[in-house]
Amino acid sequence: MRQESISATNDPLLYPWEPPSGSLLVHKIESSTSFKTSPLNPVKERRFGFANVRYNDDVWSFDSLAKLKHQPWAEFRHLVIAVGSNAAPSVMCNKFYQRNWNGSDFFPIVKARVTNMAIGYFASVAPRGYIAATPLQKRGAETIVWASWLTTDQLLALNSTEPGYSCREVSAEDFPLEILSIAEDGSEVVAERPESFYVYDADQGYILDADTREAKILTTQSEIFAYFRELSKRSEYASFAEFFAKDDREIQEGFTSPEAIARFEKLLVEHELRALPNLAPDGAIAHARDGYTAYATIPSLEPPAWEGSGRTPWLRVTSTRDDLNRSRETKVVAHPSLRQDIGTHASVTTTYRSFRNNGELETRPGVIASVDYRDDVPEGTLEADQTIRESLGMGLGEYVQLAPARVASNPVADAVCPTRYVTARVYTADHSNMETEIALVDALTLRLLGMKDGGRLVIEGCPHPDGHSPEVRVRAVAMSEEVQRRHGALTKSKTGLYANPTSHLGATSDLAPILLEKSLRNRLNLDSSQLGVVRLRASRKSALADELRELILVLLIAFIGVLSVFSNPYLAGIVTVLVLLGAFALTLVRVRGNIGAESRRSRRT
Image (cartoon, rainbow, N blue to C red; front, side, top):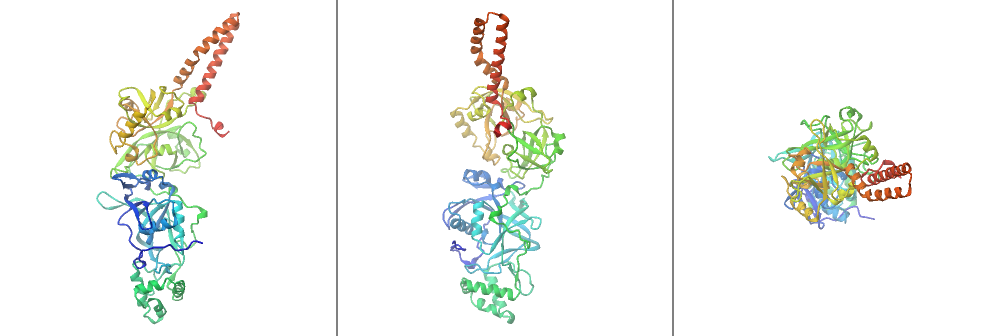
């Protein structure tokens, strides 16, 4: 059976040890005493996934660096605050090194402030002989704590190192939590306010002051030992002298005995110096079997105070459900109250604080999405596909607006051959396609669209203020390896003409690239936008023409054969028409198979 406590080399008398001087990210644990960190700073009014991390002389978002390191990013983690030694990076790294071997060693420790919560002393003693911290409810109190976004394996490992504590989920309604950020002028500002979080609460409760009968607030081991040393000089509390009538080191070493700990707990109860836990008297203890709340589902931001460019109020973004029919297009799902203003397609727009440029406001070009409406979507929220979120460089829990978008459509063609769409990120043209109406895309994009290299491509750009979505038709050519190398080298810029999504948007898992020259970008309403987004589909007319061109020789041979077999011109004509109709039907089937979207029924069978 695993021992309850872990080995440690830090001095128990120095508990709770040193918290970091500022928010940081631990990105590698090399041993129980050796680890690597990088400075971290959340962005004001952005979700934690876009927190700045200074790593290898560059600025990354937390999510981008997590993905680079093959670690779960913020939305899959669990928010836990530390009130005692878990704020010290050395303590957390030692715990994870011993209890999460080969697990994730990538986690942040971020300065935060909680209201209505104070930090007292655990009404017991830790196995190494110190009196640990525990949170308690105290109306009006404001307390600095340290927040970590932990993976499930890290949280379970941490649970195993906390004997005598329960991992409790509490609500910001009772204990408002503010994640703090450092502004450019050095002042502290609030980055976000999560609506719930986890905290470790001592099962034995907390120690009370003998005179005020209020909680003893956490300071140092020397001070709490000195308090009981003085208290034991009073006749009614003389029984505490057996533990505290000695120097600090002897007190600490004496408390490493389980019998001494049990005796101390009994004395606290006898003298009414213990209060039961009061964070959530009705329970609300989190157990592994229940699952832990993921940060992705926890609201933490208010709607932006600034005015946006959409027609709707600000809508908080959540993820789309798995059963959504998205066979053709990326989707958003809204409440039916928006149907009249938006219609079937929307331009999804947002203005947010840049994750890089000191939190300056940045407006992203609108992204086209097909809109579904469901009564069970709460008003004020919008379910958005991950493609939409990555297009805009934003996370779950952030805010967008919708504006109606008018996209060109042909109901008959859509019914006969509904085409697939691919969302692509626009980059500056390569020298090979500069000043030409040729789009360079990667080979995978062509395959996804069912196109041949050199086929005609339909590109839908950023909708204009009146909702009209511009459209251009160009030839699509697959990028060569040399072009891909040049593109990769150029897009290492942080800003400007060759900006890349990781550095500029804080988004690593990005969209398919398309390289377009300036006049095409202007026609697509992306003239001044960096990293704009377009929708691509294959041209049905071009695909049909290509297939018919390949059938011309077959049709010619069939026509000659019909004339040689049937001497009756009327019969020959009928057979020829039937052959032509059959060829055309076969061509449609081939075109639909190549560029058409699968139906929902065919995907289920």
